[in-house]
Image (cartoon, rainbow, N blue to C red):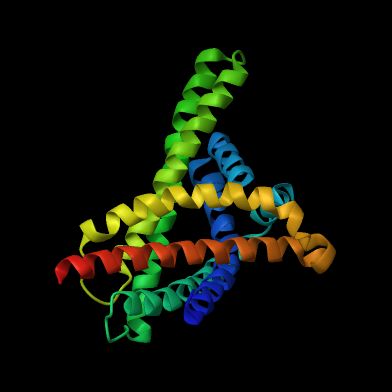
Length: 256
């Protein structure tokens, strides 16, 4: 409920939206041109349909157009991602340092290094969850050879859901553990990472239910999709900071 928390969360949300599309373009480009796996592409599309609260078809259609464009688009996406990823983790580091009562923030260069490392780790976790989902799906498609399509989709969806939540928990944990400019015990933040990773899924479902009542389309017109995604990212940022606050308060209280 503190004012600065909302400031940090809005800053994180804006940069997260700026990072999201270049991140997905690079992910799909690697899958298409390195792994050459249409099954993995299908998993990414299913993830977007399940993960995004709104505008799934619009986002998927435009991402495919960008991936099929010239290589210059992928290069520009990489540059933008390198810039905007620091915008996500810079305010988060300042916020987490306050939560853990660390007096000094990292230098700008130091924050760039940890930001790029965390962005790379998030990419690896996302790619790993996609690959682990695509493997069983591809195997079952080979075994059933066109039969049992509904069963294959059900197993693929359940696998995707479990691995996506597990990846979210790992990302929460890495941010809580590595981003503050001080020593944070892994045991102190692991429970918060697990709880917030699960709550983020519940938050998304609640947000999807609430979206029709928010009337973003009537208020913002053509910008409704961007506003919907940014507001969702803002709520996720608040959730992340709440988990960090609870874990830090409990650890500091027990230390005393």
